[in-house]
Image 1 (cartoon, one colour):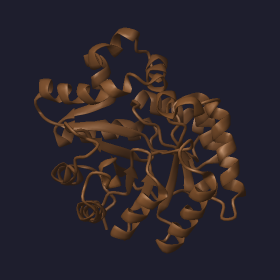
Image 2 (tube, rainbow, N blue to C red; image 1 turned 90 degrees about the vertical axis):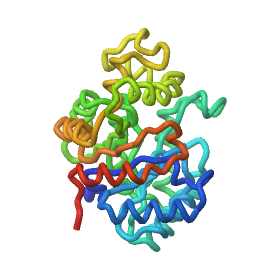
Image 3 (cartoon, helix red, strand yellow; image 1 turned 120 degrees about the vertical axis):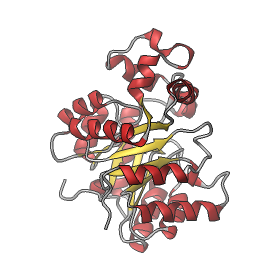
Length: 292
């Protein structure tokens, strides 16, 4: 790539800032605080629209706002390209487009030939009146083919629910130049049993999605690891559990394995709606943020 998106080393992944069930003023205040704390990127989860990204861009001044991810089945490429161009022009190029093919259970009958559909969607973005440059988009890639596409037709990859081992393999496929920005789920709780219960309650949703379980199998896990919300082995691999220093150690494992950036998702009992601002502050004190 001729240029790389400005992500910083550490970002925050959250769906709660979509403002679907959280008052907009609370969303704006939380986004502004993440900006002030020194995080490099807010990854807006839950299949956000470009207009929801716009709300966060208006509330911040420095931080990159990325979709993590926008489903290609739910958002027309022409509209996405138009809004991407307009929002970046208005906000200093801080909108990074994260794209994904989602899951068959969510997309329904539309979910056919997802790899081909992603290539076609990228072509539509390339040919739009206001094209989305490859350097301003990343793909939610897990398997080798999508990682190769991330390398060849985007700035890089934003893998979700992965391990440092996956990161090392992804780096080998992506090469040195492409961006690699994995997501990492964290539970800030020093009670191991309670932390695992919180993690298991959240992971159980993902264990019904074959894209993730197939990737777990590629990483050496077995079908028995997917029972009852996930085995302790799977939980320990997919989450960072403990205090802030423990979280930092896991982040450093990802960076050492080849990640350029790690997107931290703080998991609570209601992670899709909670704004864990106190925990974001705690992590900001412990992590290597790019503070001015």
